[in-house]
Length: 80
Image 1: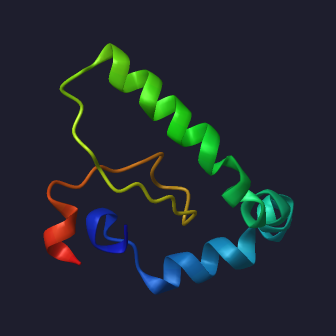
Image 2 (image 1 turned 90 degrees about the vertical axis):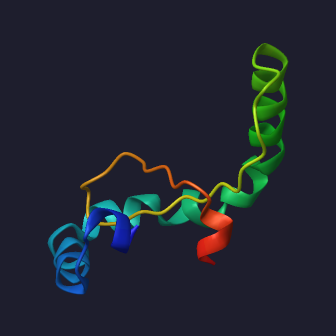
């Protein structure tokens, strides 16, 4: 995300320092995110039923800087 959206470390630190209530409000849900793994997989399976040509992808989520609701990367596996 840093590379794709040109985020700087300074922006991240600023977001953390400026919005402490936000970060505290999402902490519990973020720590519980593993329990939603099965529901996400079920949703993807349902989506695959509608779009049979759907290709597998690695999914990540990040919470940074408030500048993007999401980003797609082509061929991410080759970048890691």
